[in-house]
Amino acid sequence: MSQDPNIIEKVERVGGTSSQRINALSGDPSQTEESSQHFSQLVNNPSTQQIQAQHVVRHDEVKKIEAPSPMDVAQQVDRDQRNLSPKQSLDDLTADNDANLKKIVDMKETLVKNPNLQFTPLQEASGTRSLVHMDESLRIALSKVGSDTPVAKVPIQTDMSTPAHKFIGYLTSSQYQLEHLNEQISFLSSSGTTLSLTNMMALQMKMGIVTNQVEFFAGLLSKSLEATKTIMNIQV
Image 1 (cartoon, rainbow, N blue to C red):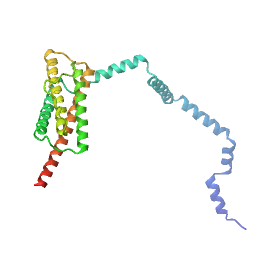
Image 2 (cartoon, helix red, strand yellow):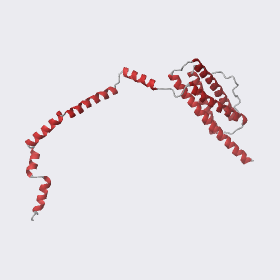
Image 3 (cartoon, rainbow, N blue to C red):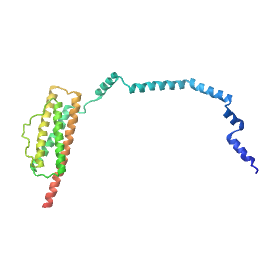
Image 4 (cartoon, one colour):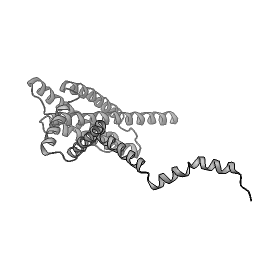
């Protein structure tokens, strides 16, 4: 069976000449020498040496980051503390406290006027948890300004027969603590006394919690009022 010579010629062109393939397999000395010279030029190239030096420096830097000395840790902590700064002044806190105090008084008046206000079991549990959290946060806030939890000058509601009465008791306690806190902050401001950074940050955090709980309970009270009005309208 005869073969087409054109096919053989095409295959040889693709793979290269026979002498080229043999030189590649056997390792032509001239090509080996040329490759060696090229490698030497790359190694001795200043840019290559600079890259190697940078790699060594970066490796050392990584090792230093992974194992900081006690002095490095102390310096970093000092820098972090200096970068921290209270977001509010004592006067700003007093203004926020006044706003919360007004809302607490308004909510108390609403409950006093509606002693039989109905709350679902979930609303009662959520409201109780919210007011207890607010009361605890105020106690901690008072400790940060150097004051113990005061003894209430107003009688705390002892009648827990309805959710409204129970909520009035919690709000009365928080109202007095908030008033006492403002008095203590005013004293610190007038006397030029400054709080430590740690106490100031803790005070801001706790007062932020108080604001959130006031808003939460106000929303819960509003929903209860709306539900009660709806029921009364249906009965009428």
